Length: 463
Image (cartoon, rainbow, N blue to C red; front, top):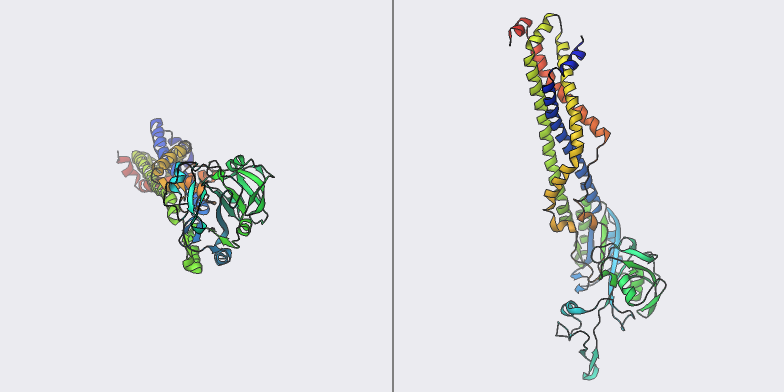
């Protein structure tokens, strides 16, 4: 009987031991497979996060945040040096405005002033009553020649103009959905606008309707729904259109600079600061994106240490098992040596036996790993998710007053730890099987070679 066939049969020599070894080795291999799959899934998500979020830089006029603060506006001409810098993929410009009924537009705001509006507004310099008059009441202002004028305050209509309408999401973080009409190009200069659903209903507007803005007739190109009443009460327009209407050529309220990778964000931010100097505030999402990636890195660290532990445990289990088996068969080894078996044939026999046991354990471990990989990963994610908190809700500060535009990246932060799934590939299983076989060969060859070198008479005398 050859060494290979003898080793294969010896693997099933003791059924109880075979089952026990298979389960123990299988658990170790299964845990290792779970950790490998978790590492692969988490690393894939980290790569996705780094490429999609945390790579946008916000540039705004120094001291200004939308309609708050002060300072001087930026221009596209000034931003050109930043837009053409290395590692900059795309630059989105935004211009914010607000217009009032009977003054600069014939539109009526869809949002009622209410208690909150009366408390928060600071309507004019002469108004010392910050809470405002009762709803519907008139306000008195200083007029010419010492007289007074009376007017009723109404909520303004908020306008956001951008050169990248297709990628714009509006206040509240919801990406707008076009419910009617066709979205115009952000690079257009036509007198068109995309109207929020609530504003359209309030003013009986539909696609093709017109309204007045800065004495110009504006055509409704589309109606959008952003999922919240505030955003649905605003207007979206091409950047050049609003710049022309409001007599602010080249002026912008803010710019979003998309960088090719999070690793280059700091370098681009330094370039922007150097080019614009004290004219602009440059804000990077480094802290936010790092907070989103940190829990993923924590999971990766846990998985790495667990993988190392399971591999070491598997190797030790195989080594001790084969050491025990070899010691039990010292007399058998002596007999084989006495009848002329070489050391190589004896070692081959035990390697074969160990390989068969490892293959059985690998099959059991592979099934176990595939079944448990997603549940275990979900547990690790749940433990890490509690530490992410505000970071996963994306950047929410700053903004453009009533209707700020948030560009690509926000949703990716919010879902950094959501829907992570492991996937098993044939290549991964083959590599894992190869590693297990190598461990089995090494773990069985060492004790078998040590025992095969003893003299037959000495082996026959041993218990």
